[in-house]
Length: 239
Length: 133
Image 1 (cartoon, chains in turn green, yellow):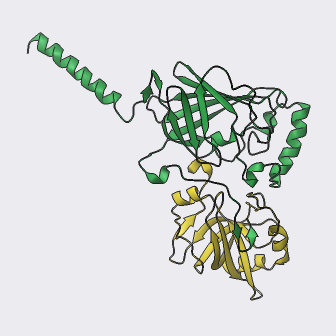
Image 2 (cartoon, chains in turn purple, blue):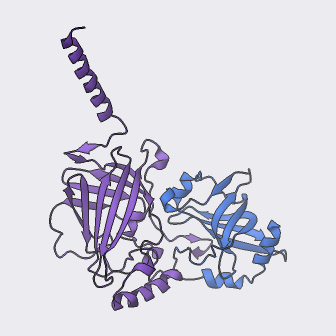
Image 3 (cartoon, one colour):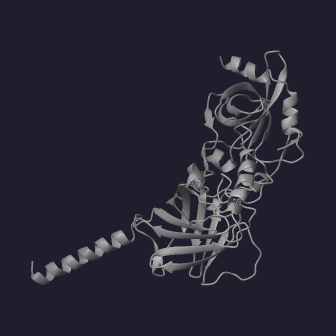
């Protein structure tokens, strides 16, 4: 074999390896120079209707302590006027970022997140400024930007009716919620580093990491199903 | 043994049931159930409502005074149940079933569904926590 043939063979082999790995199911999908978070995902770590904020570690303002006492008592007895998800209001953000299955659709100018659990979709545009003067909403107002391969989502203007977690932590109109998403090299896991601040309620910044794992969208049992909260009459009683 | 546990629970006055469930407004909390206790109820399906956020199953059981008592059982959301093997035909009125539930704290006949054994012997879970769905 001549040296030229040997070199050609080496290049071809390297190209084959690149093609195989770049198109492998285990590769991180890319879009426009960044990870492509599109796909079906399952909240996996620090999820569910649990306690996000450890009470013993939270340093609250007097107003925070006053509100927490009211909300915690309401949650503990299942009072729907306090934990309004019990009467079918959306749980809001950040609680709904901890629940179940999500279908994420990424485009050049925005990301849409369709969650299965009892809440509207999140539409998150890549822009620098929040919407001005809009009303508070359950899911808040979210904008995003890229920091290298990390997707940073910044949310404010979340309705004060919602709770920060299922233990009853309140928040004010100054709740500021940041998610910093990174995708594993194999494309199978999202790690979302959360930072929450609310100077009216908490004296310190709170951090948490929530992870999501990729689901198999070809399996229809894993896909999103309709989940509309409803009050139904069963046997003559409203349930 | 199973029936003994059932007898103890259904012996509590049914009046409490009306007080707990006769409210004019519905809500969807599991706070009213005692998650530290499990009881087993054997009976017949009276009503089924496949609805979100929680499925409802009324079942009729006989207590230790040979009285007919209707139990209201609240379960998981439909997506979670589906992923655990439930379908729209899993429970029908008249089916003989055995339910393992967390009972209502106030002792009236109702519970949070943990496990159901169907007439054909199949055992289905409650739908699992949100992170498993």
